[in-house]
Length: 210
Image (cartoon, rainbow, N blue to C red; front, side, top):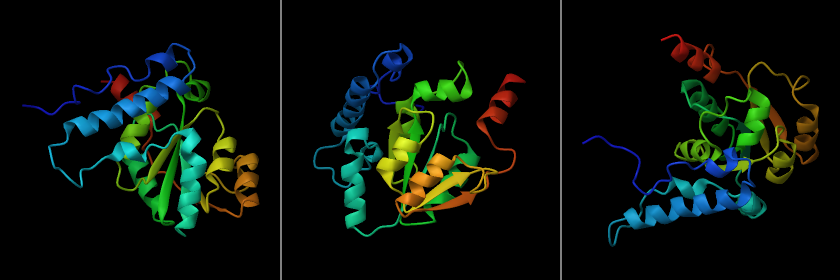
């Protein structure tokens, strides 16, 4: 028998977001549903079960999570993006980012901001689905969804020790508001090149040509 998604996983986790409704309340209910469903699937007496959904940090919990990270003296690496259709370029980049410090927080653009950045046909996967897939990666310690097209407010809350950007940026060509936010809080910026030829757009074009 093939392995599929658990029966309790919501069929349309992005329904309210794509319908143009306020995303915050549905998102919280969906995250709680995912966590509750894991508890129900555990065998009696089971300990040490994997629960990657606990790595999804709500916006309201981010300051508390960041304070705990600082208290543990762990060097926090932060990056962000849409991560719409995860591929080898993404996971290689995230691994390299994580290896810059002690823990990696990934900021995920909410669905509305992805549409603003990528066009009306995106995202392919809703924000909760994208966050959940990222949370399942060993290199990722936490994931937080933010609403805006730019990462300014997210970075102000996350206060990275190291902010990693991918691609052909230099410190001079990246968003200077983001740069100022990071450097003002005492963080530094690291640029990691993407894997050549690996992108969601390239993958979509390949699929369309089949």
